[in-house]
Amino acid sequence: MRLANAVERQPIIYTKSSRNYKNRNLQNDAWSCVATEVGTTIVEAKRLWTNMLCSFRSYRSKEQQSMHTGAAYDEVFRPRWFTYEAMMFMANAMEDNVHADT
Image (cartoon, rainbow, N blue to C red; front, side):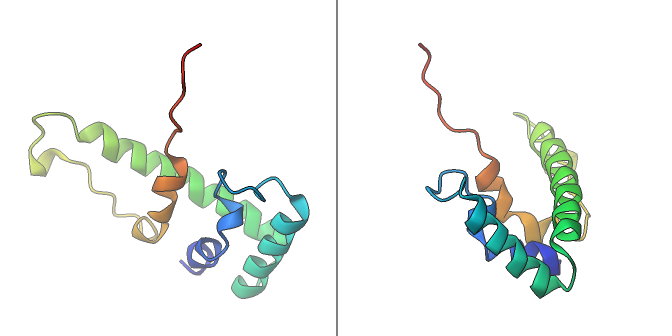
């Protein structure tokens, strides 16, 4: 949970709409802050974050698929993963942008 909280405080890591999102120097600085806060290396922090993000996406997908029209409260999937709630800030970051057909 410390990693999720540390990443949440560094929005440049996950906010693709940020104008500095592709700036590698700022990204590396943000990862350095995260790694220092968690007490690990940058490489290890990125690896752990990738694993956590994969799990979050999987649980989020299961939750979204279970919320179909007419689903009873008991039928909706409720993730019990310990960091699911701490990573809910990623739900907005993962939303697909509106695309225009050409």
